[in-house]
Length: 59
Image (cartoon, rainbow, N blue to C red; front, side, top):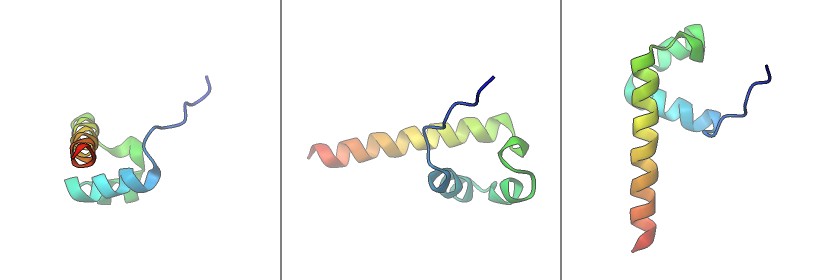
């Protein structure tokens, strides 16, 4: 099965991982090494940032 291209850039994912405190795991084990909870938190934080950016640009 072909892998889908991710929506988030690698740089943005790294930024979020650092912000959420699990970047060391990503460096050691890759993205497959993070917990499902961490992945969920990363998605939640990405959505929060996108919503904030939309609010900032709406003014």
